[in-house]
Structure formats: structure tokens, C-alpha cells
Amino acid sequence: MTPIRDLRADLACGFGLLTRLPVGWLVPPGQPYRPGRAVWTYPLAGLSVGAVSACSFWVARRLGMPPLLASAWTVAAAVLCTGGLHEDGLADTADGFGGGRTPEQRLEIMRDSRIGSYGALALALSLGIRVAAISTLSSGRAWGSLMLAGALSRTAMLPVLALLPPARVDGLGRMVGRVPPLASSSALAVAAAIALGCVRPVAALVAVTATVLVGLAVAAVARRRIGGQTGDVLGACCGLAECVLLSLLAAG
Image (cartoon, rainbow, N blue to C red):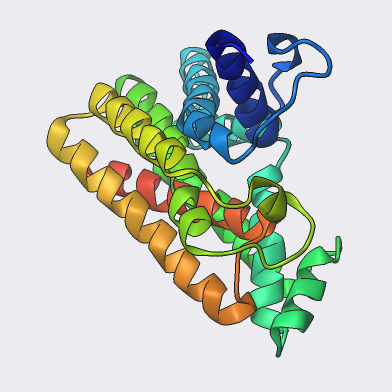
């Protein structure tokens, strides 16, 4: 493939995995994807979701909606953009990690499409934290804050991918596999540039540090509970990181 076609394939792969945005036109039919190499596009995919969220919040506020209601519609727009991918991963991971006694049992619970009490609680808390945090933002601050949270929350998956092997022989975690060092460093560079463009340097440093710490914490727990990573674990990592980042931004 030519460099331009490589770039287009990476963008289509990254956006196609993490969003429901129409990106199939980027690559001609039959063009091969390389999910591991495409991780550098994850911050960009998150940035696009954050931009949609920020637009939704701005429109809702201009229509006269109170902050809490505008925030709820903002989160709804983000969920529509991703098809609830990260919320599903968070719920499945909470059910598996909380309900199983062995790694095999936990993986089996995570594969079950039914939601349990742990998953329901995790999902409710995640949505509530995000709505509450966004409701504290002014229309002006919402643009940078939501785009930053969108981009960095997807970046939080990198430590998990870098440190853990796939826990299954199939699924998203297996498909992405080990990430090339150049792709990881490129993703971090893209995420850092986005952070500096969205908030002040000190806030950007705090946000990037928090992102890495969330990724490391999720990797440590996943290693102990199931011995590796799965697509659900990656989704849970993204959801947790977004809650942490929005909370920090709401706190100023």
C-alpha cells in the first residue's frame, strides 16, 4: 500500500472500531486493515465523538435547556456516536470481575449478553457521573473539555494493550493484538497535541497523567482477574477514563 492508502486504512479501521461514524468510504473495498497499527487514530476517533458531544451541549443550551438536561442529551449523543460500545464493555467487565470466582468463569460471564447487578450499577454510575460533570461546564468550557475527554479516554486503552496479552483466542482484544511501538508513541503524541490544544498546559499535563494512571490501574486489575485484556476490558477502561477526566475538568 502507498502511504496515503495506509493512512486512510488506519483512519477507517480506528474510527470503524470505536465509533459508528460513516468512514467506510475512506478505503476501497478489499483494502486490508491492520488494527494494531491503527491505534494511533484512537485519540482522533475520541476527538470526533467529543466534538459531536460539544456541539450537542452547545445547541441544547442555546435552546434554553437547563444544564442537567443539556448534559443528558450530550451523553446521549456520544452514546449514539459509539453505539454504546464502551458502555457495553463497562457493564460486561463489572459483571465478570465482580461475579466470577476463576478467570474462566469471569470470561464466560463477560461473554453473556445479559446484564447483571454489577453491570447495571457500573453503567448507572458511569452515566450519572458524566451527566453531573458536564452540567457544571459553561458553554465555552464545554468545547475543550468534551473534546479532551473524548480523545484521552480512548488513549487510556494503550497501556492495557501494551502490557497485557489477549485473554481470549477471539474477540476485539485478540484482533488488535500487540501494538507496534511506533503506533503507541504516535498515539501518545497525537493525544498530547490534542490536550495542549484544548486546555492550558498544566491542565493538559494533569489530564494526560490521569489518563495513563487509569490505563495502568485497569491493566493491573485485568491481569489479576482474567490474566489479560479483552474488548470489554478496553471499553471499560475508556468509560472509566472519561468519568475521571470529566470529573477533574469539572473540578477545575
